[in-house]
Length: 280
View 1 (cartoon, one colour):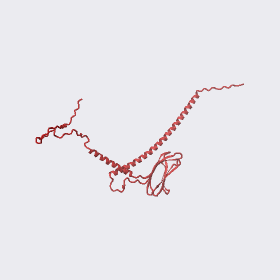
View 2 (cartoon, one colour):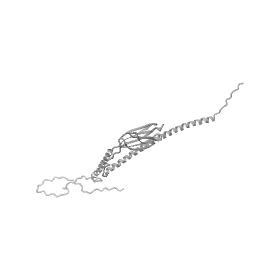
View 3 (cartoon, helix red, strand yellow):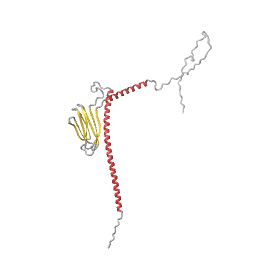
View 4 (cartoon, one colour):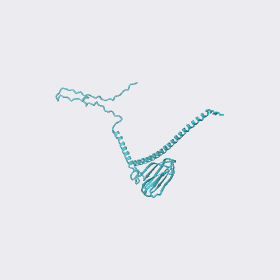
């Protein structure tokens, strides 16, 4: 294997100045000394550091500037998202016994829109009766034996609105119901967004897009959470049925086996006639 030769950078060697003392001469006899290599200023023996890939600190400063700008933009986006207010409402999951009715009440101002979303998670045929009444007692929504539904209405009268869930038609199965009741319109994420004449900036458009995407994610998570709860309840019910059926089959198998053993034993058992003595 050939040896690798290392080439050195040519340059003048470092000069070492020797200081010698000569006898003192009169000023007139002193001759001007010629400039020689030894009279030149001494070179420093320290080598300059070789310039590698990092030629200057300017690149580091340039790369730090975009990072600080991105951090400021992200902080502004979080502030805008936190500034957006949520509508007033309630989200609840409760159990409704058989032959029972459960009602909820909410005070709504006139002209305010409210919405009701509900879904039966477990129980029976996954159906329930639902109706909504205004403060005057008028029924503005009524559905019977619905698995899920959505209702939106703008209040025409100020007062307490009542929405009820009824399971009175069922005599032995109780239900688990989820509902989401929201009151009021969602405020804009940006101030004066509806009255603006100019177009949105790139940052504002990104905030609106992210806000809408987060709302879609929340709705999807709620939907899949309800589906997961419904499927889990159905799987547990099926598991209980399979377990009970297996226990019944096991008991029946033991009974049939014991009956067959007794029947076969009766085939091979000899029956001797009993003779009675006749006394004369």
